Length: 614
Image (cartoon, rainbow, N blue to C red; front, side, top):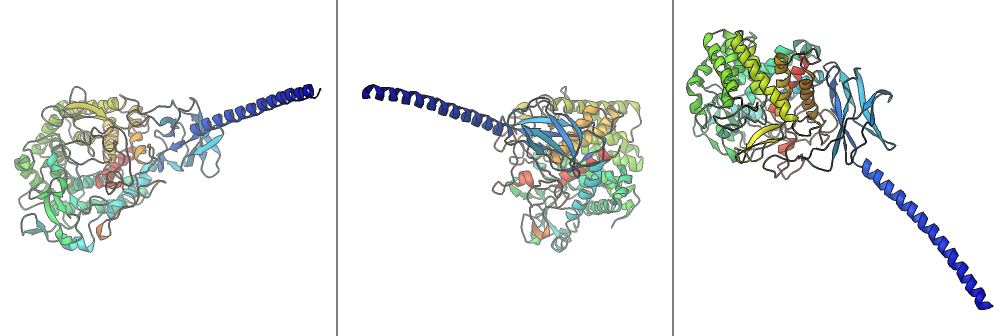
């Protein structure tokens, strides 16, 4: 009896334990399911960032932001525009299709948020709700020509900050020595090249032959162009007088840089030495090696120096020198370079950079003087550029097969042709130049769309290890042997070219005066610089919410508010420039991304000027 009772109890106990176990198991299973769902939500929500132009959008232009996330968000998800003061929704629309850029990484997805249809001035932010959680962008401004109203004064003040006018620089540069000589020249003035480099360049990378950027002379021409293109806007934001003074200051430095023989001195190099008396007028090779090859060819700053002096001479305003002296110097330098430019060039022959720089020089002299000799030279250089176009639509830099790519001045061939057309009236020549501009712009749109490219980043072709290759960023293995950096100047130059060139070959009644496809292309490049990029980084220092760290330099120089940093590159270590990278610390090499450089700001000024001129 006891045994049977015991057995019965054991059976009951077993049943109870089994039932309890099932309940526990069910509870654990439910908890596990909840945990899995929770983790899925966390994974889906993890790292969601709303990337936007952190400064301003123009009221009547294309407007878009980007949602960055680790898992593809469902299509048709709604985003909202909030009034940043009242936090009320003022606009809503659906996200575009999520996409990955396989050349960059396979961890992130990007969903575009287009709000071009929203036209209301104010301060706003973007909001996205995902699985009950709200995400918001930084505040941004929307106003008529907002980017110009904010950006142009910022950049003018930056250039004023970049003046090489410390007591140390002025004393040393008043009698700076020519390399390998005891002879001294007065090269006071000009602008320091970068936030970490107080040297002064007409151009550097001369020994590469195909990579030379236009530096101080291009900055000056850019200022002159802005004064002439958007005078009413400059008056409205009370910056016109200051910009004119800055341009005259630059012209005065170019004047001092003109040698008695008729060439321009290329570089005043600091050697990164704290002793100002270490400065020399030099030609520059890799690894800061210096030579006496300091005479500028057309491509080494000479062409743009002539262009700046000739153009500013028409203002009939005097700086330290008179407008008549500016023009006389430009003519003398042009005559000299017509004879000696190829002698000064490292490889002894012209290439595409000589063509577009000499075209600018001849065009500005033709406009300033009306002389047929300058007309004829401008026509020849414009024809040279047209003949350099490949069947694919990109320019050829040399005499054979090297595609023209440039980390700073990629849009300058089109800009030069547009300026030439400001005076060219003969129909055959106009037709030729217009066709060249159209072919180049068509190529830029085509190559940019050849791969998945949600940000609309300007792609390009280049020669890499003997083969033509397409990519987002310039190749790190190139003729310099070491030089590569962020390409914000390239983006600014291409944006400017798309707008001013597009107004000639693709005019439209749209907000920028060009067809929508070009307007989006140009605006995407400007927005990338202002924060709508994968690193959520605004490259206009002192504006937006995320900036690069401050960089100090000698004699009180360093990062300046309103300057543009180098920007984003291909992956460090990838010779072909593939992948994507941005570093704020890299054992002293962070300059590749974070350093301010005057060509970036100069070209951004041109992009913003073009956007504001319509």
